Structures are given as C-alpha cells and as structure tokens.
Image (cartoon, rainbow over all chains, first blue to last red; front, top):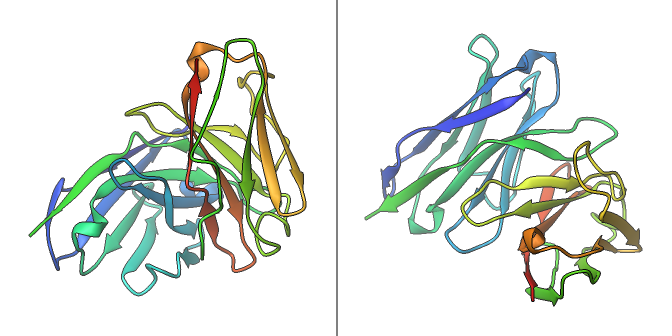
Length: 120
Length: 110
C-alpha cells in the first residue's frame, strides 16, 4: 500500500523560501510514475504546483515556475518542494501525490497535507 | 493556465442523481481523455473517484460515473447518500504538459 507523508516548517517568513519533503513508503520512486505537489489555500480550491518524473524531469505550473523547484531523492525515496520569495498568498495546505504516467492521468494516493503559513 | 470551470454548488435529496460539470478548452478537457475527479471531505485529503474520464478506481462505488462531451466533462452521482456531501474537483492534463484543476463544487445532500 503506497503512502505519502509531507513534512516541513509550518511557519515561513515572507520573502523566504518554503521547503517541504514528501516521504513515500510502500513503493520505490525509482520504479516509475510522476510525483506531484498540489496546494490548497484555506477555504479555496486545489492548485497544481508541479510534478517530477522518477527520472528527474520536471513540469511546473507556469504561474509559479519562476519560484518553484521540485526534485526527487531516490536513495531516500522522497521528493521535495522549494518555493522561493513567498508571500501571504502562498499560505496553504500543501499535498504531495503519486500521478499516473503515460497513457493515463490521475493523482492517487495523496498525503495527508501540511499547512504552511507565511507570516510577515 | 486558467482553472477549469465548475459550478460553485449543487444539491440533491437522498436517492436522487446529480451531475457536476467541468468545462475547459480544446487544450485540456476537449483535447485528451485525461479528466479525473476528486472527492474532498472537510479537513481531509482529496480522494480519486474517476480517472481518464470514465474509469472508476477499485473500491469506489459504482454510483459514481464520468463522461465527456466536447470541452465539458461531467461527474454523475446516482442514489445520493448523506456521505456523498463533500467538495468535488475535476482535473485535466493539458497540451503544455501541465495539469489543471477546477475551482471545486460543493455538494449538499438535502
């Protein structure tokens, strides 16, 4: 059974860099699939941030591309998210999820999510 | 990229059927059979309900079904139950090798 668990600071200061980790258990990242990050501001909808293929190829939301870096560490079986120059608008619950690969598209399963608050 | 368009809210009585629409463009919903749907209860992570327009993952009730016509995809829930009350989101792959979500629909079971 594949499980994902996000972790990282719950409070980040404005203009600094948000850094989160997603540990994957029950499946080896190096075996395949895309792995994605999605966020949800309080009371609002879901926003796709970006995805990384097990090989390291990355795909980013154009609106966040200049500030986002997603990477995989196959030795630790985890993926990471870095979002620079954060503002209050980046306050959200951040989720990681496994994604379908070529020929199919889905996000499943999802981690439980971690709330990150950007303070001034 | 713009979010897919969903109605803000829908409602129905127990036992009835409801349909939630998800409208995009020919560059996303209309261009690929890669639409998925997610159910989210308050304080919980989203759960995959439908993928690739019509496919239901193992364990998801057959009361949930998906379809697509042109640039609009739809999620239909038949035999509404109280436990179906939740937020629902659609998602689509796009021609830019990105993914986009809808704004979400709040389902109320009356």
